[in-house]
Image 1 (cartoon, rainbow, N blue to C red):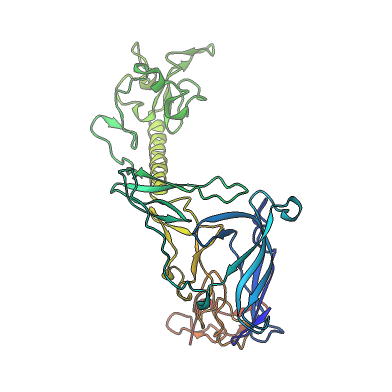
Image 2 (image 1 turned 45 degrees about the vertical axis):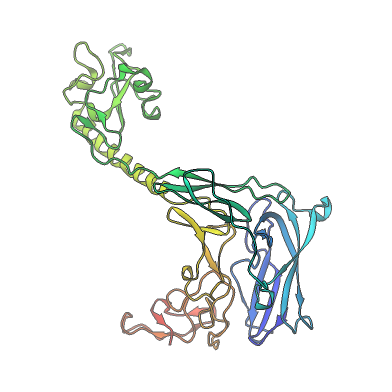
Length: 417
């Protein structure tokens, strides 16, 4: 615990966040009080990341990080902290003191006194030998591609973390996805596939086999029946025997189109109104086309967004980028960072007056704090807010402090004053 001109601060062991197996990880909490005796408010994010970043930009994933203490520039607890000390062990181990792979990490805090005396003299990254890579840069201390040629985007491969320091992020330039087809040319059907109306399953056994066509969606169908994607050729006779080309499947949209797609003798099973309900098949085909287009569009959107961005980069559309001040309004400049587990930007310290939760009903709000969000109104309102007459019902009671829930009543109508 230490004090400052703003109040009292506490760094403590925190077990609120469950990070799953082998994720004892950080276990660090932060709290603030204006009195040091009561009215403590606790951050809902851990105070330490689960990744240990070195001065050269490289990163080590940790299995455990606990037992925090601080180094001060004067009297402990009464002067400013300058460094944090913690016991750590590598990924794959949560018992460093027993297995001998635990050690002590000492890190400078993000304060003016610890600012580097001069700019880093790290040499620029060399150009990539890959013609698709148009720019390189440092990510976690390693030179990688950071910008691709037009029509391509970066995809990141996560490192295989071990118990030793490793930074093996890889970035590759992948062709941008093609939007799904929504309409087909003449004599073709069923977007996004656009199969020909005279689709012949026998022309290519791999193409038309019910076990392979469209991933085998028709392999469990009874001959002469359909789902919302395919029709299984053939039929069952009165003896329960399979007849016709019952090993083949065709697009459901070709059923009843006047073309013999299944058999070339007699009446093709896909064109026999005595065995197939053409109207029901058309309705099912329409449902199937709608579902497939929706799936194709979703796959296109997913492929158009960046995924698996290496910490501390954040996914923004097709690119991975650092978190910026505008990602969390109300945050102290330079203190917006990426969460070390989820791909989202959080605030390390809010500006005075934009704390996510006031310490008490008398807290004027001038107590910026550690937290993932900063806001002046809405679902995170304050004891000094008032009703917004322009948007709130006239019969809504004035904002007052709800001690039981630690927030203002009528929050959705509160604005700061």
